[in-house]
Length: 126
Image 1 (cartoon, rainbow, N blue to C red):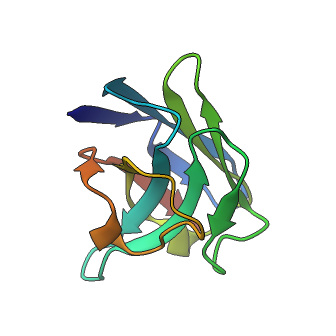
Image 2 (cartoon, rainbow, N blue to C red; image 1 turned 60 degrees about the horizontal axis):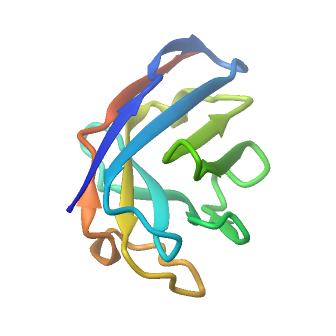
């Protein structure tokens, strides 16, 4: 079993940066795939980005490509989502998730991820 806890959300202005953290505990191994999703009020959950636990491959949604970066610190069992040039439309609850297997190409649908954190709120004001 794997537990995920997100942190780092908050209220920022458009153009600002924010880094979200995801602390992973339990039986995390190098085969894991980690992903970030977000859900805005009244909208469906949306894929943001994913990374293999060994950090050698990533994928991003078109809406965040070039602005957001996912990374892993395997020594600390941490995943990160660096968000730059934030826009009001980035406002959402951001959740990290994990799949026990290394799957290439990296999955972009929530059904492929078995473990989830509770999420952290990000609000971007205009």
